[in-house]
Image 1: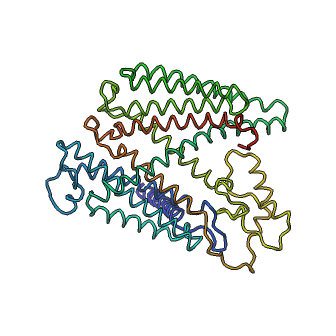
Image 2: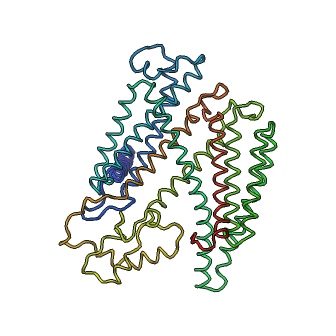
Image 3: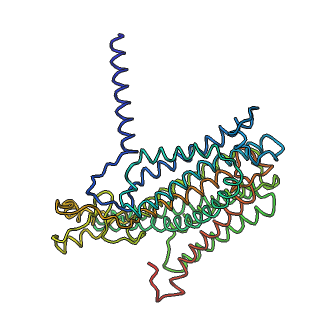
Length: 466
């Protein structure tokens, strides 16, 4: 029996070590041959992994390290640095919030510096974004460790906080564009699948049209139910009533504008309406007035989950869409996966035409077939006569700048945009007027942007808005 258990334990340990080695190799290694030209998505997985690592460290600093430093009586250079500027708060809760915010800023600033350096590096070497990742992770961790010895004021609580506010607002504006684009692409993708199925078998495309109709009706019903619940739980003051009323008016406005013309779709309008309802909920739960917010002082788990979920959806969509050729303005250039390698002069014009499209085009069914059709041209790869990859400027800088802006937004989302409210607590630091107004303003931007996409083709019929 002991020998059997030993064999099982040995096998399990071997599987674990093999899986861990494979994971570390995937995260830190360079799995592309040196002759494969880098694409716009080079290093994307490892860059996002570093972002997740920085968020994990920020949570540890905010909810672990900061309360520990406030609670201990030891006074040294590190504790004094973490409590710098926080001594003026009268209660331990507010001191923990202050120290926790600056702990988040330490991790976020390290990530921001890393992504800026990574963006600069591609100007000198195109393959820099996919190489030397073990050293890059070590560099990031050393930055975090070094910032632990830097006082809060003025680097974190003053300089970085204001930089992060600007970056966070930029990301919010871009996030609204992403969700409007997502709403359109969701509908267009299902319509394209319906047409494709209909061309293969008569009547088989109806299921996709039914799915569009059912999804649209379901989202509209959820929005209406959400409005009723918002009035019931958060309608105790004029500010919240105004937010909810404006949300309903804007939702009706976008739906009427969509039904009035041929632009947009019912599914897109329902997605935008549901998204606006979620943003309205996030805004009213940030209200620091106890009369307006019955959840004040407690753990608003639902709001946090919604906020994190929206951020994950946005990051995932941005991560793929920003690598699309039309988004980055790249044509006929190379892709990280080798789907659109540089075509040598010996290849035919037809082969060049096949290899013209590369990257990821969101919800474009035809792009898959085009990529497969151009597979033969891409599979040939570079010949032995081809020289090394030239160190020309790469579009990878856009990926790193996007992640730098995301870092600013995440740090602001975790710290209530740098405001510490006496009515909030460490479990829900996002409560505050700054967060409330920024969230509701982002809702207005998203709704007005969608309305513009509906009315602009009618106001300027001679211009191409496709």
